[in-house]
Structure formats: C-alpha cells, structure tokens
Length: 579
Image (cartoon, rainbow, N blue to C red; front, side, top):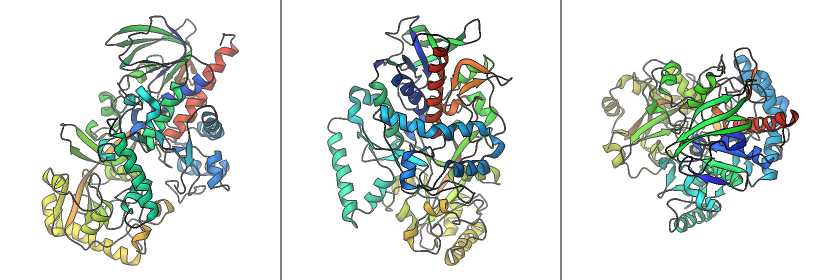
C-alpha cells in the first residue's frame, strides 16, 4: 500500500483507480479492503491526519447476525428470528428490503474478510439486543467484537491510527475493554484476574519503552487496526491523508467517473473507473446541518470524531442524491459528560454501560425528579432527556458506596483521586442529599423523594415508576453480584452523595443518503446514480434511527461496504471493462 501522509504529494493528476473511497473510518476501510482483495486498484481519501474515524473511538461492536461465530454460541438463532425482531423494532421507519439485504449478505461479508485477510472477530458470550422484550430478540450471537490487535504489526503505520479517547485509557495510553476492567478490579480476589492483569500491565510497560501509547489494541481501535493492516498488505491500494474532496464528476451518461481532490500540497483530478464510495462519517460536524437536524444540541456535546463535516454529502446532493426520510431520529444518541482537559480541549465522555444502570445510582432532572429508566439503552436514555422537562442537563446521582464500586464517568472506581474532579466541578459532592441539591441548584425535596422511592424499589426489586431492570438487556448491564433483588436497583444511604451532569450527545448520524440494496445512492425518483455508493453513516441507516442492538452502525457499515465493492467491481465488468 502506498501512503501519502501529507496530502496529494506524490499522486499524479489524472491517476486512474478502479474505486475511490471517501473516508478512512471503519466502513471506508472495509470497502477498500473488500475491493482490493478482489484485485481492484483503490484510493482511500481521508481529510484528517488519522485513520479510523469514530470507529476508532467506539467499542468496535459489530452486529452481524447469522455468522459462523454466532452459531457457535447461539445455534438456535435464525435469520427469521432476526427479521421478526427488526420488523418489530424498526418497522416502516426504514425499507425492509435493505434489512433483508443486510441479513442475507452479512454472514458472507464476515466469512470473506476473515478468509482472505488477517481481520478476526469473536462473539460476545452475552450481549443482548437492546429492546430485549420484543419478539425475536436474543441474548447473544449477533454482536461480534474484534479480536485484540497487536499494533506493532502496523510498523510505521501505527502512528496513523486515531488514538483512543484518553479518558478511555489508563496508565498513560493503555487501552482496556470491559473484560480488562473487570479483571483489574478483581485482581486481588482472583488468580485468573491477577494473571490477566499482570499480563496486560507488563505488556504496556514494555510498549512505553518504544511507543507513545500501548500497542495492545481493543474495541474500535482493534477493528481499525485489523482493517488498516489488511489494507496495507494490498499492493493495489493507496491512502491519501489530509486530503479533501472538491467535486464529483459525471460523464455524459450521468455516471460518476472522477473526483477532484485538494490538499496543502496540491490538487489532482483522479479517475474512478468503477465508482466512488462515500464513507465520510455523516453530517454531525456540519454546522448548518446540525442546526437543521439537531436544533439546540451544540457540537460540543458530540463525542464523534472531527472529520464528519458533511462535504461529501453536499457534493452528492448536487448530483441529485436525496436523504432518507421517516426515521425515529436523525442521529443516534448517548448521555455524555464534559470536562476540560489540561490542554484546553474538552473531553466528551459517553455513558454507555459502566455507571448509570448500576444499583445505587439514579438520574434526575432539575426538579430533582427521575424522568427515565436509567437502565435503558443509551440511545433511548438520551432521547428521554430531550423529551422530558428540565432534563438538559440532567444529574446522575450516586451514594459513596456506588461511586466506590462503579465510578462515575471519568471518575474511576475505587473512590480515590476525587480532588481534581471536585475542584473543576466535573463531580459535585454533598454530605447530605440536601447539601448536594443546594450545590446543584435543584429541588432538595424532589431529590429526597426520588432517593426514597429508589430505596423502596430496591427493597422490593420492582420499580413501579419506570420498570427499571425488567428486561434481559437492562439486567445484563446491572450488577447481579451486588446481591439485591434487582441487579439494577440498590439503596442509596451512604454519604457523601455525588453527582455528574449529563447532556444528550449525538454519537453518529442516522439520517444519510438514500440507497438501494447494493448501497447505490438514489435520486428523488428512486433511480440509482450510477457509479456512486454510500456506506457507514453517509448511508441512511437501515435501522431508521432506532438503536435495536449493539454495533448497528459498524455491522451494516461492514456489510454494505462488501455489497458496494461487489456491485462496483461487477457492474463495469459486465459492461465489458477490463479488470
């Protein structure tokens, strides 16, 4: 693979490629890998200095039902079950034909990339669908995760991989996933946990002698590492960083055949003989589109990567492309907390599963009242914040025991090192509920009642207000080891009490360009714009703005990247073009 680290320096004007991919996130890299292993000459264009997009900052979960991995842990699951589940969860909010194409081709895509590249997945032992009370849902087998990746295999390409969010690492750049965290917390209680912890700690100490951060990659960083490594093995691939797309050009038949690019080191027009794949990450960093689609939600609350400026989407709209309609929401969401870093940048921390659903924690609005099931999915939680009164910001509240046990956002479990978080206001402490409410400026009476109700629910195990902890998904992200009647409920009685402010943060675009089952971009008449494809968050979500399971952005991103590459390479061959 040829790598152009400083823009277009080294790329000739008029250079010819079979496929040009705009964006080097998970979906874009997948499209490039699938095309390259079939012999295509591929150019990947990335406007930032890093590869990976938001995928590199994600958990890397890849929801693809029906794979050989899934059948190994859940042999009774069927695609008919998945179809039933998605029909109930998504319904008419997105075309069923696209879901059918995804389910049909998903196992093929995973099998092909594992058979022909070093990319490897494994199933989660237990990872329920998010709306697990719907027919057709399951507890495991559909969500895959990338196998941890050794970043040293990338050699000089390793610094090009987007680093993880610092707050998701420990010890100056050591990545940890949920498995690692559980072992680290239990290392004094279990020989297996001690062995695992010592292994990853020793690896990290050795890494820091030669690298700026740890090279044992997990979650989304591992997935991007796998994909970049796979692409690097393809001599027909070129990667251009720090490069923007200025125009998409069509021939006299209306087919997209060329791309105009620019960078600090020059400009170039390149030919795309078999097509262009848009994988630029969606609209979330476009100020105008944010104002239109996400009114009242500042970009400062968005934890997505910085490259999603919407430029490629604007160019495609100029060719007649249209956006999908009818979704539950134009974006996917999670509650986030904010903290200023020492360098002046703002850390945006998404609260997925590690705290808010745990016993001993509740979330209240500015009247001190609960307004949502704290153990629902992060997407529904953040939508609930926006729908409720006086819930932006909301306040996640815990007693001292829960803080020690689970941490709160950027505050690690253990209950130590709180001073910096208290000093800058990220964490608020009160010796009593009254004192905490006064510091937060919320109703003390409301907070006291919310805690009293929670404690009563914890004793019975039944939340009569919001039904917290009643589904398999909710119970899975609770803490059964806490010993309560309900793994998501626990009494709050040990002062001092703590709170962290939460805001609704958009974690990715759900509304993108309307496509068909081959990922071809469609115009207002429903006709394909020949030579133009969209995948990832540039493609309108096949989930219709619903978040039915973990990894429902990365999974379809991978599968439709496969379908786009397959169609693009076959289409021109059928027309008589030389390979």
